[in-house]
Length: 301
Image (cartoon, rainbow, N blue to C red; front, side, top):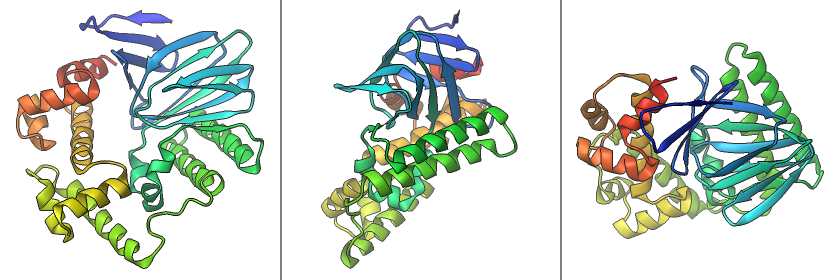
């Protein structure tokens, strides 16, 4: 593994045969193949990866031996044939010893957030899943991961979409098998109406993030009081209004930083931050580096 020099001493980058992994403090930034947001790594080399987090969903499939994960304060020993799924933005480390091998999958989760049943169960999905019971669901998820790896390896037309279709299948199986008995918040008629209104509010935010949106503005659009809307929005999405809006703006900003050469002022304005100073401050708080550093990391590759 060759080390890659970049301008910021606090940023560490490592070159692998199939891409790069970049650390800024404990925040990891994963580079993906062109026109995709999926990475699959095979490894049979003993390895310890320090505590970190990232925006991607991470899935481990152990092929031989075992891999030890520490996720937040919980230790998972993931043995041959077992699967561990880690939600985005959850700190974790891993250790793999001699005689072990694994596939490691990283997929950005934005597309999942638009699925209403996943949104309704979001708090229940925001925890690790260690699949080791040998159930039909466990076996189906393991087989689905192998199909995803095959699609990733072949890189045929629309392979990125094919990989995400497999990820959706995995979430569907998780919900059906391991969340059985958990009632979505849309179970009764009154809550169904509330859910539809919150979904409409999310669409409104997604379409108007460039504006100076306030909680009162969106609550008024939804026809709820400020307090009731704030509580309902948090219950359904798992995010506060402020965090959801910030996440949307950062998502747009990251795409502009990676895919365009627009100035920082233009990126800030087009993503809804209003000023470069606010953009820099929020970006550093949430991403662990400045927008300029972020662009430098990805621009090198």
